[in-house]
Length: 209
Image 1 (cartoon, rainbow, N blue to C red):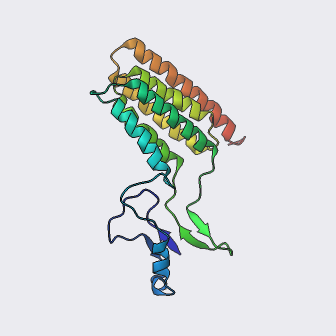
Image 2 (cartoon, helix red, strand yellow; image 1 turned 90 degrees about the vertical axis):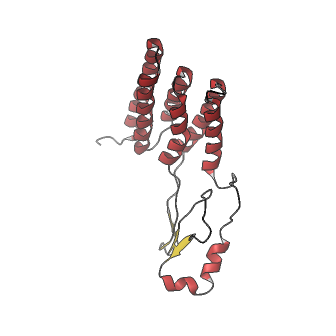
Image 3 (cartoon, rainbow, N blue to C red; image 1 turned 30 degrees about the horizontal axis):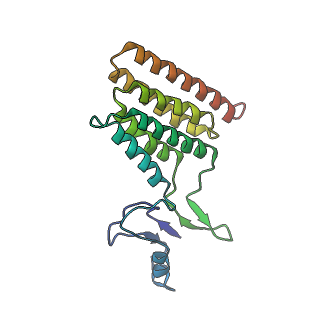
């Protein structure tokens, strides 16, 4: 059994393990160690190939820079949120791959470090929410994005992930937005997200549960 300790895009310290093999004495037989090492491509910078997180982080970086006080460009940040919402909506429809790979006899052979919907959602939204600060427009767009993604959820657990992000966005707005009408607009959009998540939860939860 081979456990892969990194996935595409991870930073690898020279000399650190890329994988672990059980039983340990098999790593030295039949050139297995060399064959495992040959399965990895290591470079000095990240690339989009097989690295979904890299593309997400690039959009997040653009949005965060746009929200910096020196730039103050909420329109660019909103455009990035729109792109991220499209990606999350697509992921909401897709079955996330298992961490386990089996051989022809259905025996466990490889354990990977898989991506998760929760991890990608955190990556896409956390920093933008944290930097949105006093921008009502960006805050509202984040909630609108969650409402869109919520309509495409097909796994019950993902509903709770979006609910958690909606709650954090709403709490941040209450603390950061000085104008009462802006806070009310955020609350209205938050209520719309909650309603959509409630409908989605009913559709993805089997009757009787």
